[in-house]
Image (tube, rainbow, N blue to C red; front, side, top):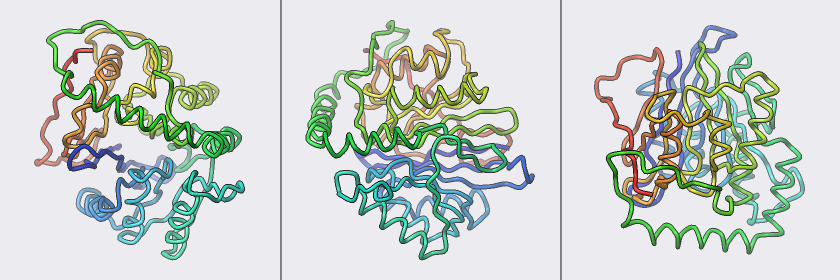
Length: 335
């Protein structure tokens, strides 16, 4: 059994990630719960309520903070305070001598202190760390790559801020031109438009393999991080396309390119359905996912479904939920 929920984050244009999973641990035969990111501060209690209601437990076996941006880490404080969280996986900048706000070190240390105060074990594993009999594998980043990205955050902080401003400006300029089409307009994505930030590339990338199904969770990782993770998964014999794909960074055009998509999902297959893709976007974040990204993923056989103010679910064998109806995929979009 595997049950994956993308919980909505963001009433308006704000967007974040809050993902819950319940699956059968193949090493014990028992169901376990994993939470990947917690959205903003106010989302933690809602995640806890979701776990109680739909998974029937007050326990989270593993919580993962992919990286310490506010839309991923803040809600984990409330989750830890509300539920019995057994383990927290988080990478700690101060462990490597980085203590400033430019790498969010104080915020990470605060979450770790909160976790320990509530009896949660804190892990710091990198590529190759496994849980639940190997069902869940950390595919990236490696420890050396993480340290490199910490250094880039410190030494290129002003560049990172400039990139962030450029992202915001670009998004606001295209909101009104995104529209649906009746057919595939043809691929226009050629590269990752300059890439994403070092902190996004530090995201923990997770592979979940249960009952013959595979799910790949990407955080906000970009092309170099995703390819390093793919290198490791290839070595582990996990080079086949996943059944479920978490679209990185809310469908930003700075996180994927055609070559990386081919590697992760396979070649263009048109309208054939090879798997499913989910993306977390705010209720009124009409500029995401970017059209060229959503279309490129769909071309490779992964129709994209977005949260937009509602929880969405992908499951194989989970309990029936009468209040969860079918969710339509995003149409072909004008690029």
